[in-house]
Image 1 (tube, rainbow over the protein chains, first blue to last red):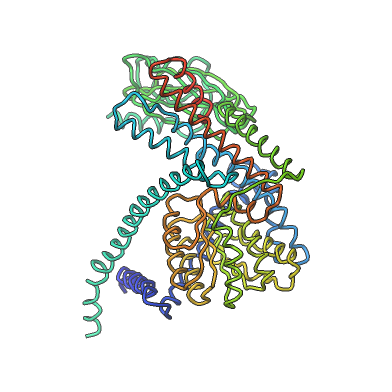
Image 2 (image 1 turned 60 degrees about the horizontal axis):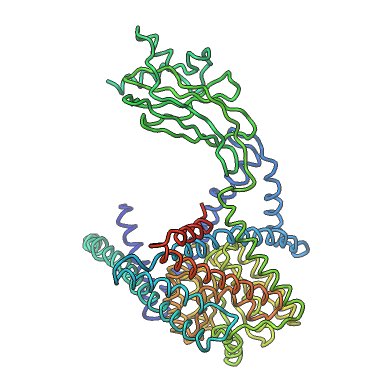
Length: 218
Length: 404
């Protein structure tokens, strides 16, 4: 049996089954969807066991390798057990400790990175001179600064969008929409290239194998 | 031939750990092996000024070695050796001859480590440079992020002040946000049509700030579905998000006085896989035909797939994300879209709790400060092109905003 050809046919049939959704929901799409969801869920379970749970918890806790057992790992291990205890209704509420730890840690860590990348770095990049160049440089810099300030005014929730604030917010959202339009076109082009890649797979890898099957049947 | 020489040296050296040689003659056996096969004395090292120091602003366990190259002499390779007790030496790195820095990681804090660097020149090992010593340690504070700490403390102070004001009963005004005003209408519509409400909290985990914001809004939406008696479906792609979602929906149903209507299985896991999740949610949309769809959280390439399918089944769609590349798709395909900051404002807007409103007002104050800094900074930078003090002010502002 030629496994490569079998793989190509499997890929092509599953691709066509997924594309059939463009017409309407149908048994082929349902089958492929359930296969996709089920297989990927199973894959991620195994992935998490071998790439997250084992190296980050089990190996450290048991001292696998050169290092000795890291007893601090008992704390996350206990939290992990709390999460599993959600399956036991009487003690399911213990999982809230673990969830509180996850949400609190996540929010705390995100606070620094979000402020750094989404606020401070942007402000630093906006502090630039609007003079010192030609007219085009002036317009370029001025548009950037005015766009940022007006965009911030749009996201100012303490004042109604009326009068001067309304005007500035209007400019801000207009600039945002222009940026979104450019981003839309750019991303659609990227998606089209993905579609072309899959179409090439069907045309140049799958279609040439059809005569082989016809030969087998004949 | 040079390669063969190096191989011969490596074979002669045997295992990585070697017995120590007397100080000054080099602790690595490479030099000795080379000396056995060659009558001439080992050449002088190609590096000078070897120094070892604890890596600053780290979580410990690392030492940085630095050295300078002797002008006119470039080794084929450099061999870094380490000893923790001064007796047993082991090779920890084999570097290109032009390298001038090396960071040794995975060390034990509080232990003194000694290092030497041996140059391999034309198949012969030099006298080792060093030894030099350092003790790795962890630092509680990142010294280059002090500016960030000050800014965070100031912003937090402003936010806490507004929260306090809210608690004391001060009326805190928040302008209307169209997408959020439509939440109740969307749930009401689903109830009238006898169809479900589908809530999609994005594809990231609970360590993502947008997912956290989404969970808070889920509580509000769940409260409304409990009040109206509508069916709420929450497919998720992360097990922790599922657990948090179940707890939040349960709380909302309890708060609405409808604990009997809560069904744990309505918040369910599909798969961690991005497109597997999108395929599964699409299937739910076309089969259950929900009347209202909420897509709030972090989304990537699946955003358009979900939003288009939701539109095709005629659902009223309210989306929100802070992902700039996905917002255009939501704006194009959804009835209402919460753009960036509006998603984070949603919890305060919907709940009208003084604590959350105070927090939102504090964030507004922070935005005002940011706008002020930008305006002052741009003016200073512009005037600074012909007046130096203004340029210094612009540089100062950039410096305090800069984070390593």
